Amino acid sequence: MSRSEEDIVAMVQRQTTYTEDEIICKLRENNGDYLKILKEYMNISDNLTVGNVKSASQERYKQMRQSLDAGMQEYRNKNPIDQNQLAENLEESDFRESKK
Image (cartoon, rainbow, N blue to C red; front, side, top):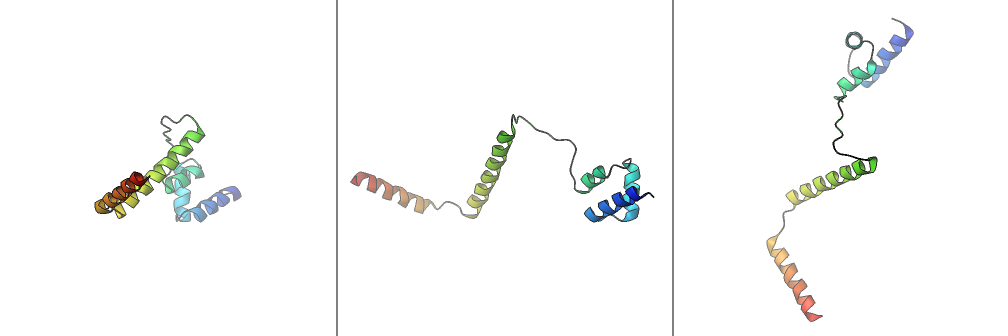
């Protein structure tokens, strides 16, 4: 094994739980492509589906909206709306509006 191959095996070993023998076997299977081994280990697929995103900003805001929506859904599940409190708040609001 050459020095560069030893370096590749050491690098993959640092980033995975594979043994040296497993790494050598996987390097042979993937024609020496260590990135494929790392992607396989981390379950990263090569097939990226972009969808209807037109720009990086659009994707960024889409991700933020999804994150905020998921957070609000989790909050609503943990803290359901109290109908009585909501009715009291509406009555109090109507009362204040009528005094103006």
